[in-house]
Length: 160
Image (cartoon, rainbow, N blue to C red; front, side, top):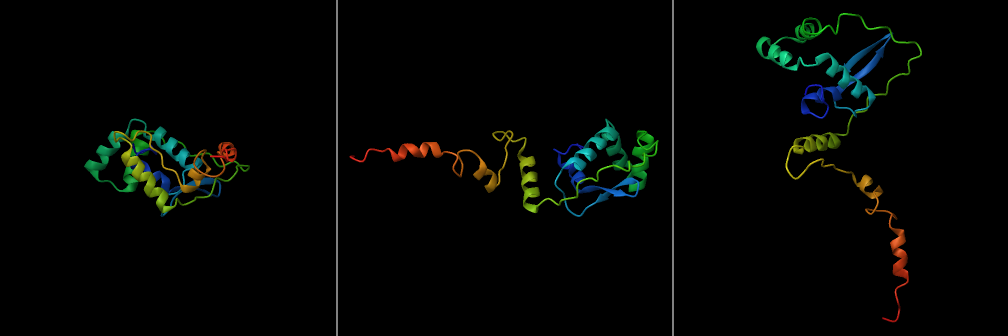
């Protein structure tokens, strides 16, 4: 769950920005959650690949040892997995820069958390919320999406 963006335990991923520092990439923690684009999905997938089935081992280690960040990193990176065995390759010179970090509006973040908490409730499967603009752009909700029905009203008999 710690690497699954659909779960609350993975909200930490939404606060991470991948930033170019010279010829390497660096993970920088932001103050607020950001909108999840390709960088966010990259972090999620990488987390899943590194963690694999070790999530319970990591949880047990945290519970029993109460480690600092460096100890936890060493445990996961060197003891449980071989994720840090090789150094990352330098960035290609022609690499296109990643997208900028865009903070998520507070209301949107709150709505997503509320929807996620309601996910398992009976009677609300696959529930989605829409903004006013999204509803107005939907067919049969707003605008002129049903103009063809209005034509019949003009032909109403006048002698009634």
